[in-house]
Image (tube, rainbow, N blue to C red; front, top):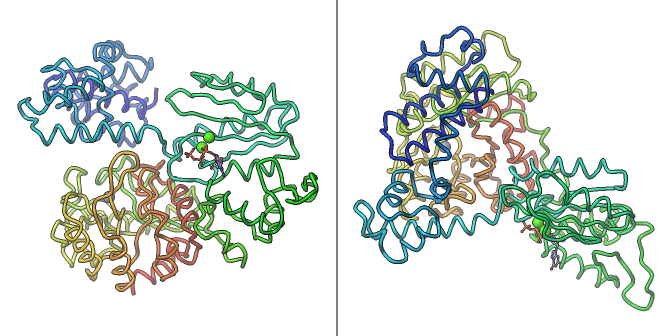
Length: 575
Ligand code: DGT
Ligand code: CA
Ligand code: CA
Ligand code: ZN
């Protein structure tokens, strides 16, 4: 078993122990163990072999033994027993936003609550509010949390479901009966969250295709198994639809099932105005003839051209003006993943990242990037092990040494993710900030300020002479945490007035600032930086989710700083 998988198990053990109300020293030891493994920069197998685990800080004999067992056998009896001893409903309660292990344990012990349904009932009857340490406010928070979990539980992060969908698509394409296969729906439009997966296949022999799909190992329930459409529920609750159409209908069905619904409605209106009826089956003259016009329409490019439109990328099909723009050819040249030449907002083991400077820059080199910016947390983010000025300046030195060593073709840039304090002041002195290539400013505290307070807090940071860009503008965590209250338009205007950048945080759970605001902001001249906010080498790959969101926001390379070569980026920073 590899170190990351073992770290996952140790974290889970910590949670389970906390749920059981064990001594904090005990579960913290497992948290420490998990963090140790995540940030380990040498091979675990070698350390185990040489019996050196206990030589590391915080790794006692008992913990070392468990890590060794997991490393060698991939199993741990202690863990299995622990999982079996905690009601699964308690673990599920951890998914309720704002409810931690301590409170879950308290309601479990006092009221015997061991499922979310029972928790809801206990809130409704006021029993939760009456518990010591809870009160009316906590109870309301739990009720809202349960509601959010239900609402959000119906949708899924695009990034997560794309990983599930891709192998299914590859499998479909490999079937002998399949002529063409594509994703459709919100998945193909790269919407940040997806309700269900849609697959579309062209085949004149649907039966074996349907059988293959409904027989997938990952299918937990078949909810429909028909001639042209099947629906399944996959493990984990995600639903998926497959439609199989005759090959000559494929292009029309693909356009229809890609959506969005609103885009489809507008396209159908347009066809009607030209005297044609456009449906998922095909295109035919409105009056008289029953004849379908599919001979000259072999793909979506042809379909759009038939309606006198330039090709509209699936990402843009949200009925936000794309059809008008396609009339005049104004929607080409969207940002592509290959345009990205580096990124700025990333963390290392110096704060709460899992990989070292060297590991991060080596990965950036593999991605072919010219530069990689490091922006670890500042000291106010103590929970993320934020750097004080001394540590920051030492990191700057280390980065210089790595750059001068000539070890990597990718150049490291020195930055910080500096906290915007509740007052709008920055967490580092001007003299420290002046030593850096750039400064990302972010809010990590006092989320409940009023809209006025939060807006002027962020604008004050934008006006600070040393700030370069605003990180994750609204703090939202998709499907989990609402954005804090903020007047986004005012902040955009302030960024424009001060020549500052707003980040498009590419973490698939953030995608913040939202793509819906980018088109008009970029038209006014706002510059974007696509930042993965990586906390590991894997996290760097999130830039792809950022590119998706940027495309949905109609961004072209011109509006994105990190499409520029290193020389221009440095020039921009030293303005
Ligand atoms: P989702 O699954 O909620 O993330 O969103 P979609 O867009 O994937 O929606 P879904 O799965 O219900 O349907 C896939 C596409 O099929 C949708 O984007 C457009 C098309 N479609 C479905 N129902 C209708 C409809 O009643 N009218 C029109 N015009 N199109 C529809
Ligand atoms: Ca869908
Ligand atoms: Ca669907
Ligand atoms: Zn942050």
